[in-house]
Image (tube, rainbow, N blue to C red; front, side):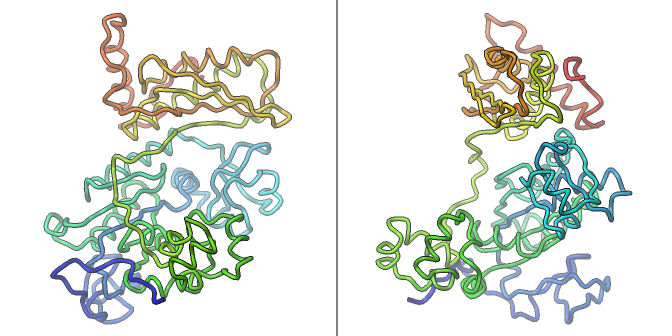
Length: 433
């Protein structure tokens, strides 16, 4: 059956002719007659018949952690950089130079160093990355209130109806946003502009780094020759199952009717076919958050001493609390994760009497969970996660039985403001040193 369109142009509006629907990403000039902008002589021009009518954007930072490190250490600009936890850990992020050698996230560090022996290894500094992410998120929210964070370095935005506010269509506003991020934060982003969330995400990943790609009514044709693994959620197992049915390209999925898709793939078959055609009805929902938020670290040497483990745990609790506050969330339940030298995972969980986003209170409960496991066993990894989430507005409320709550909240607020203004190292707590 013919592929259905992935979206539609807003009622009453028609797409500009292709030669008119153009934009210079470097200076914002429109109606570019050729490949070179006559205003700034830049060559980063956008052309698409729906350029000025699309409003759903996916913003993804380019090799975010590595980009922040290169920003702070300019001498690393032309070097392969891997952010990760020592020779026993895994790759957290690799810059694009290192990726050319085959290095990728979650790869064991020893394997990454074999592929790229001249790489510069930088231990992760999550407080620094969180600070940069907050600045980028603040810039996003000047564009539209409909910002849905997906992770520390990516979000989806709905700019529908914002043209009158900004005096420019979403594409021009987003190009200006990308320039602002580079100038003010010192990192780069890639942007996908499309008719819906799925296509925006695929577009954002198509032209990295510093990309800006557009998918509109042309999406089914663009997707047809792509492998089925391009779709989010199609992992190795599903890819093998589809291949066994002779379905290796998205165009082959697009051609299936609902009855055939259900017969071959079960109840989820028709939905998979719709996604292969680029269809997605999910709205951008700022209130939709993660089901859990966590932080973990792999040690350079095994640790069995409780005091040493607690120092590591405190740093993670501070990191977790910062991530929660950044997403306007609080922890109502915690899970402690430990991994032994034999790679056996131990987990302990507990519910909190009251939701909290204060690191001291998260640490107080996590410390109790850790005490049950410090029996002399040596561990290579520790993590703490908020597995039951609550709105930040419901956290750390005034309690007559705990008169210190307002003071604790005010103190943490003051610390956050100082760190936002002067950097995360301006305030350091004793137990973390």
